Length: 488
Image 1 (cartoon, one colour):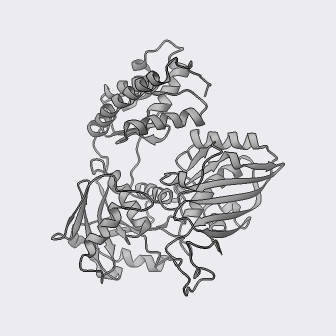
Image 2 (cartoon, rainbow, N blue to C red):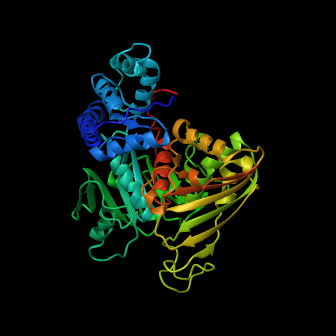
Image 3 (cartoon, rainbow, N blue to C red):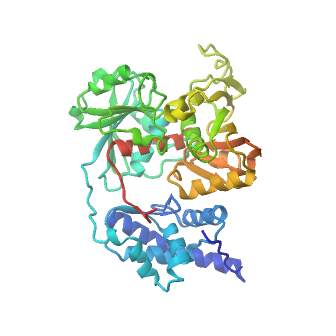
């Protein structure tokens, strides 16, 4: 991407107000594209649907900082305006990338914005706005931290309801008299991730809740065998097991014996020969015939993408992974008995040396790294966001500048741009990454390189970022595959 710099405005505030007005003008156009054409618009991978004016402006600012380019609302507004005039079929369109391409090739060639935009999406014009497949039912078995965040994602991305439909959550019996209200309140309010973005109502008579118009049944059961999902109008559903109670194919297959369930995703590392999938890295291994898939762990999802690209570019001889991990519900709030070593000590008061199978599990995702990595973990007194420190012995010598520039381009322009984000700020801390939708965020300011030895720091929202990876696997298993523009 050619570096472009806009002249400094004479009046910063006037410039701000003008750009603010353009962002405000984008909102109805973005909404029209989404509701009338089933088209989602993006700025360098940042979904613009249902964003506020300031959110849209911040998305532009991110590109200016990381892409080292002056992409602004002045460039993107005409692109979105031109898109809104076209009769487009269902797709995901990155207006930011089209805007940059126009500035670099279209404008010098004398094309108008309208002509260039039409050329970029020509085979999408007049395309179908209808779903290419029936909507797929989804069931969440377990409604804890990951279950509720996956629910938020499913509801947020429901759109017209044509792809994935959250139909039910399954929880244990034996709760309080107002159990349903209490469980739904945990979806409505979250101490880490904030309030639910929308409206929720409880329908106790129907034993369900309605979130942004999506009705979700709450089913009480103590084992999978107790549930006949077809009685709730659920058929051919993908079930996401968030409990971690069953980690092998034999245990998870009890879900498949339930009427209405056809596939299962485990939100924990799978044991035995089960496929452990990190979306974007080895998700091509998912076959239509697969019925049980593991989404691996949050840490495996965080380290596998950078390890893959670094191995492809420089080669990885060996290494060690240390994860500085926020405490989880498995630990005790105060000192008390725990069957695990050290985990009985108070999580909010201590750093706790623990173990992680993530380094070993990478071998299931990237077989070429099997046996090359060791790993350990330190649980720390923060409720969310973790940090993976990768100390790697590379096959090729490099420099900090070369490695950082490589990771920047991977984060912005590679097929793994949904998995790897990039930070170039020397001031970021863990709380800045709450809500990140990436599997990890590469911290370029912390990189250390000496010859063929590199130490890399990758932040990850171990709750929400991981849930986004689970949702991507869900979409793939359901056959949801959007056309993406501009085409690479």
